[in-house]
Amino acid sequence: MNDPTLLVLASLADGEKHGYAIMEDIRCFAGTRLGPGTLYGAITRLEQQKFIRRAATQDRRQPYVLTSAGRRYMRERIANLGQVVRTALERLGNA
Image (cartoon, rainbow, N blue to C red; front, side, top):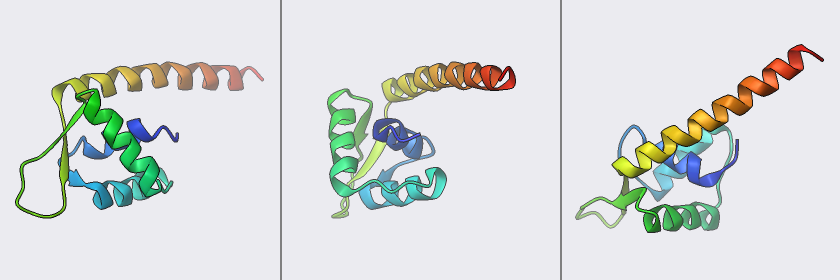
């Protein structure tokens, strides 16, 4: 699983994080490292789609928060991935 946008959404599902914290969280739970360009490209796309937003802060680091639209989108994507996984497992069982 290496879709940067879904990885960012999954990282933010348990609360707000700034860019470096998102990158480290993804490395820990997904075993993949997103480079800064990939990470911030995904963040930009997710902000434009209103799936995440910047949280209010006085800190120089900018935390991001999952929106309700982002949560709905993530649930839909996970359901679709679940179907792919179930189909693949069924077919492997028949091989």
